[in-house]
Length: 302
Image (tube, rainbow, N blue to C red; front, top):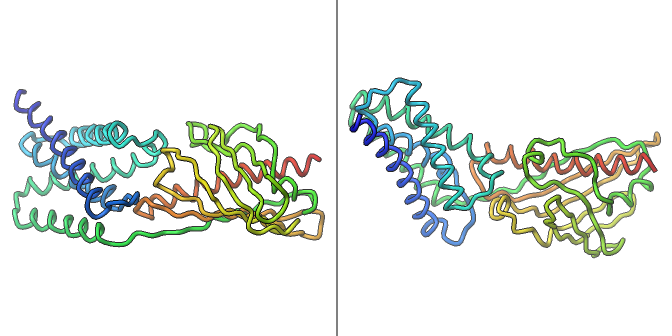
C-alpha cells in the first residue's frame, strides 16, 4: 500500500509539474509577449501528462476503470492549478475542461499500452513525435478572424425598428443560454451619444462591463456598423478573444416585415480552432439572439 500511494502521488505530481514547467518555458520563449494559447497547450501537453502519469503507475496494474478515475483526478488537479496559478475564470475553466480531460485520459491509456508492451523503440518514437508536433506548433504563426451572422424576422417596418437598433433600453427577459445562466455576462443595454456616423456607443453587460464602440456606418433604416474601440478587462475574455466589429442590417421584405441581420467579427487567440471556434461562435450567436429578440419585442410592441 505504501508503494501504491507513493507511485500514485508521483504520477500526479510529475505530470502537473511537467505541464507547468513546459507552459512556463513557452510563455518566456516562443510565446513571449503574446496572449495566444496554442494547440499544444491543450492537446500535446495533456497527452504527455497522461503518458507521464502512466509511467509512474506502470507497476500498479490498474484496471481500466481505476486508470480512468485517476486520470480524471489528474485532469481535475491540472484545472485546479490553472485556476489558482494562471487565474483563469470559471467560464474559461468550464470551456477548457472537456478538452484537457479528454487528452489526459487518452494519454494515460496510450501510456498504459506503451509501457505494458515495453517496446522502447515504439515508446521513443511516440514521445519524439509529440515533441516534434509541440515544437512545430510553438514556432508556427497563429491568426484567426471569424464572422458570425444571424437573422430574424421582425413584424415591423425598418423605420420602426431602427431606433431600437441604434440604442435600446434594458433587457428584462431572463437569460436562456446556459453559459449566461451559470455566470457568463450577457448583454443588457446599449446607449449612444448621437444618431450619426462617428458617434460613440456603449454595449453594457449584466456584470457592468462595457464595450466601447464607434459608429462607422450610419444608414438610417438600413445599416448600422460599429467598431469596437474598448474591450473590458474581463478575465473570461481578456487575451482569449478580441471583438473587432459589429453590424446590424435591415431589409424591408415588402409585406410589413423586416429581416434583421446581426453580424460580428472577432479574432481568436486560443487554439485548436476546431474546438474553441465552436464555443466562440455559439457564445457570439447567443449574444446576437438575445439582443435581436429584444429589438424584435420592442419594435413589435410599440
